[in-house]
Amino acid sequence: MSRREAEITLLVDGRPHRLVVDTRTTLLDALRERLAATSPKKGCDHGQCGACTVLLDGRRVTTCLALAVAHDGAEITTADGLGD
Ligand code: FES
Image (tube, rainbow, N blue to C red; front, side, top):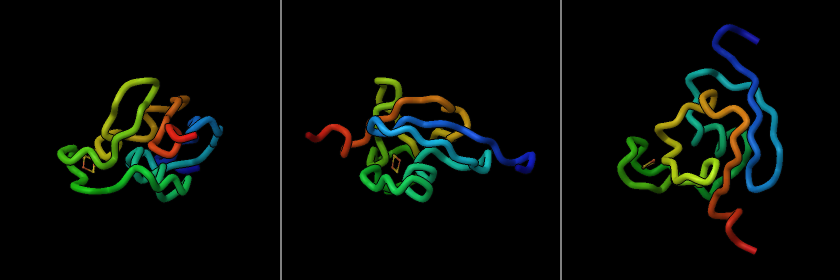
């Protein structure tokens, strides 16, 4: 692991994940590209449209503006996780 990488854990829709990410990776890219969680969408990528919104530890967050490393250990609920 290089200085620009970090190991994080995320609980996504009730499933635990451990992954190594570049420290510049957004939470949106980690979810979509690393964990294949595709219900958060990349729309504007600037925090304006809300397409990337998830519940993060119970709070609404636009994941395109959040760094994955800043949310190590977070519990995330996507739109998929809200269904039955
Ligand atoms: Fe538009 Fe995140 S992609 S707010």
